[in-house]
Length: 370
Image (cartoon, rainbow, N blue to C red; front, side, top):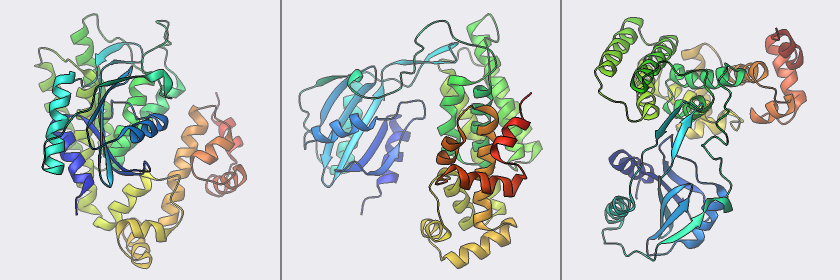
């Protein structure tokens, strides 16, 4: 039986192209996506599934990138690469990982041969307009961009750094791009290269402190920080400050993950990772136990013995932490915050929040206002 996830990750690591493997109803079987590349909107995904054939269909989707789609019954394979630049907070305008159509076609061919042991045939190239599909444009609509520190910027930074603290690469990468788009940082030098190096140093400092909070030994964290800063200082250029700082953050995150794995049983560590990734949808211990492949009773016993809190209390603590951040740094209605965190209604969030903090969400938000 094909391990779709391993296949997709191997291809992504080798080429840098993002790949989605789904069934013919659009349900995801595997995904390996560069965090800097856009998601495929649901409407576009539906269209691509309709276009899938035994032949490889090559498409240029304007303002999105190159897309290849084909049917490998019973799976649908979609591979894509960006063709546009992105801008961080209106300041750093760099290219996301790019590839021309000739190389894109060659890399798709390699994956097709590896998967199906035969040479693909390609259909006629097509062009679609991204305006027909719902997707957030990464580029600013105007050059007049707010560069003052903001609550949204701090929240984006905090969410990203929680991924480092948790040792959770998926959580870090999910929140990295919002941080780059909303983060509180400026043009740090007159020279473009010096400014990028200073941004790298600032980001490395944030990652270092978050990693220490996550359990990485301070000496090891600072040694890694010194090594990275010295390496960046020797660079004659930084062609993509997004990807460069993201890989630095991943490096710290993976080091935290190793430390956590050493101090926690594998089952507990995997359970925590699943909770971080599915905070809004996890409903009971039985569902979590199924994901980490053990019995609910064993998971409850091992989790409490290893962390000092029950599984459900840990989930509640993480939801309350997220609720506090959203109450402080956003103006979202409490009903929307409740829905975001998986509570069926505002009243249940208010009840649990007060049980844990002594305040209602409204009282907490008011207490944090200057």
